[in-house]
Image 1 (cartoon, rainbow over the protein chains, first blue to last red):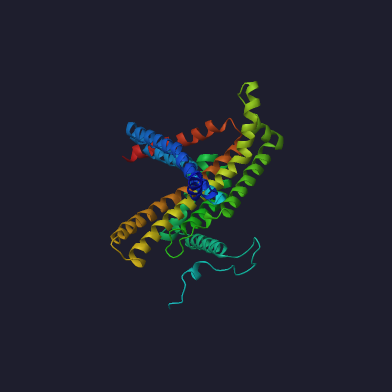
Image 2: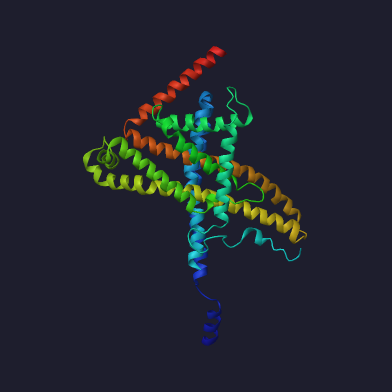
Length: 91
Length: 279
């Protein structure tokens, strides 16, 4: 009975390097997209409010908004590329 | 016709210098294509020399004046801006045309998605702003201005100095390169996934799920337009950050805020006056 259970347990495969790498890759991008998501929402929300309060500065506000967006987006994309690196380096 | 393998169009051995780092493979050849496109665009546009420009001359003038006025002069200042506008315009046009190859049908490969090219540009920018800082302020003053920014109570320097040195000399070129690289890799991957899905649903495995291929085709078209925005934005951001670093190296840490806001506010005031008179 015990031998049968041990044999059945061994067929699962357990924790492999590929499996851990896949979990790691998922965690890297998943957790890494929370911050930039909130940040970009804040930037665009403030820009919309500023353009609604003072439409004559809409041009300058729009330019600054794009600059803020690109700087924050960089962090999310670094996470995206890093998840592929983790996936490749594990398995 | 059946033996023709499409992969041979895109994956071939380097045509010269084989396995060395100087191998001439498709990345290098596409970089030359982007450079030739950029040079041809600029030369053809600047040949006409009319006082009231038309078509090609207008496009090139708009592009160069955009970099010179809105990036170099606004960020660095009206005195020193035009001197660095040459380097900034080179950066802007080269990055824009290299990224543009991503949405050209048939090529669809942004040269800046291989880390060597953004890394080289970032190293070049690092050399430029350090040399400018050393030449304008003297080597000792320049490093002192970065490591010990003025107006901070003395004990905080223990915490602030390593952070400032690390941030200015190491993190800046690193994030410049990675920002451009990661944006282009992500865009390229996204486009590749949707193109492959469309090809699979509509041409290779025609099944009951094939109408979904039309959806992915539409999304591919929308993504191409979106990628055009990302391409322009990334070129602008790289150039603007370079200008910001050069401006900081020229002016030093503290005074540049007053200078920059003064010039931009006066230019806006004169613009409003002329608009008021015209209206």
